[in-house]
Length: 290
Image (cartoon, rainbow, N blue to C red; front, top):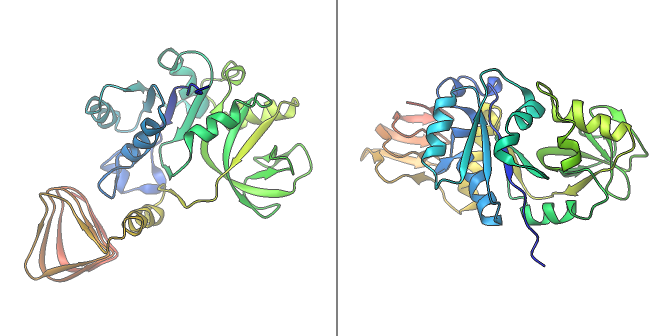
């Protein structure tokens, strides 16, 4: 039997304060990673898995997110938030767009090769109210604790059982229909929904994830995500169609976006040049915006 996938919500309404000044120009999910905005990479993974509908919430630079959604193939809906509502509040407000039942939630600043079908299948085992994607760590490390059966027994310093392993929560999870009824607006999923559910004896489980992943929430981690994009494709550097490289300029582990210009003489080393921006070589370890 083919498992039906639930709709997905990509949480994209945050202010992106840790990524400033980049997020003064673009909404965090729309900063370019490689050849596309970060949100486009997430949408590609969800579509490839067969997710039937995607809702993206928007607050900071919401007009950019709305314009991006309109440029897609009609399968991306936007829930605009005049005021920030938190993760739980964002999901609650988008209820009419998501419909009933389980929902797959993905933080808009996380890039990971999560097997979406495997996550939904694990959740469908039926003995849990939520299933979190977790990178395993030694016991006591990270914001998540797991027992020997993959049950989440620690979350946000609240413990509800014997921990054998720690973990890092990726911000990707399936939230069961019963927990959606507990969503508060404004509020947070972890503190206002998951922790109270665990305290009442309900089961939250983990799907372990051991591949590389990136949180683009800071300038350094954003830079690392772009360099990882190069490495994953075996590229020394990348220059988009429509970009211009001066005859005396060379690239070393750098990315140059569409319509961008690199002038001067020398090497651009480990630089990220946004679409439409202008960089002057030589330059190293810089993010050049328009």
